[in-house]
Image (cartoon, rainbow, N blue to C red; front, side, top):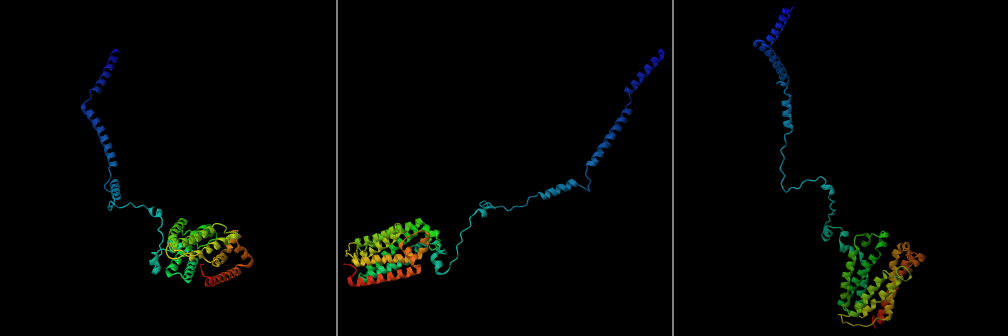
Length: 347
């Protein structure tokens, strides 16, 4: 038994020695087989990852990407070119429309509308008809009274300037009423002429009126400037009640004194006017007040005015009041002519 155990132990040790000391060819075959297996696996993986010549998906995709991303040639902009702003046209206010005007009016106005021309608006606000009529009448009276042509011409121009001032002042005072009643023929009320511009024109006209009035004498000029001042005061004082006629009577009563005291030159001295002429002139002013008031009776009644022309108009009617006022004024003018022929203008 002891021998058999020693033999088994020796055999086991011999097997261990044989395994440890294996020949090289055995090791080489195992390593070669392992290496061949690994190489086959590497070849399979490489074969799977390597693209075939027929497909080449990544190459085609790369070429398409390069063709798509290729930048287009841009035209260089000059350095001083302004950047385009798409919202610029929307932010810019529209240019005012300038109508094309041809002919004489287009040449005179420079292609503008009459409403844009300040002198035309001042002319419309000056009550031109009344101003021209009064100026012509005063110039005619001066000529009939024996005044030279140059003096009659100065009288005409002086009265024209004074009446223009009164027209502007009246429109300034009545601008709110005129606007409320929708009177489009009033440039100040319609907003076509600024109030400041009208006041500036009044100041300039007064600077022209004073030397014109005193050209025929200082005393005569003072009477006419006083007549204009009284009429302007009447535009704001007692014009809505019974005494509305006072300023018309007083301002017209001063006109004969302007003519009778006048001459040529600042030192000219005439004489006082006839009393009858002064009274008739005052009555003429009242008649003109009634004639002018007829055209605004409706608006004045809506505003609550109670002046004498309105009261008579409510009783007689506007048409009958206009006829009676016209007849009255004509009669006063005739009496003035008769009185002037008999007693003269001055004492």
